[in-house]
Image (cartoon, rainbow, N blue to C red):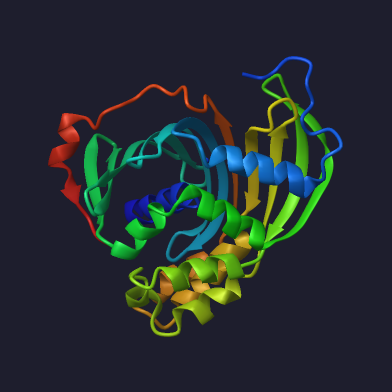
Length: 286
């Protein structure tokens, strides 16, 4: 069970992003133009803070239906990549609560997750050249790739979030974007889990839909929302026939999951260091 929670936390994280008074930079702009300006600005962030909320429902073998609520906050630095996040996880039907303190650190050519759960430190080493290559991509290249595969963008309203006036946009991004990323990063070692024909298998995930809230005064991204149920089902389908146990693939295929992320303190976040006790963490593998 702990490994499953670790896996989901990592997915949440790996699907990892001064108001100007009396100005509305969104005025007379299309949804696509607002998105492009906001995403271009985010590509220049050196650090930021985020809040995360997620609700998950799944069927676990021998345990039945399980509902999990996750809430957390974190700080991200971009170059080198590192993140510190604290999460509270409530498993409703089992009346269990967990507090998770997690660090994700770029260490040379590897990406390492250090996680403290119930007083025990765990370590996961992601020694994957393809993953590092993807993380190290030029942010402006990512912007152009995103805009290339943006298939739908529509302004659907306005909303005040944390005293910031925002424009609310629904958007859809074609899975072809992720397919191109995988094709560009052939070293990404996911074939061991998903088997041969990995890109074709992942294509079943389908397009990604988001809702995004953007500050009208400076066009900074304030909030994201995603329903991840369909992508999780696609990942479960892609896992089928690989080295992952059938029970786990079924969990992903039937999972209901959403994710809300808020962004703040761009380029003004306080730095942090990995605690010394994390260096003695027990290493685990999936």
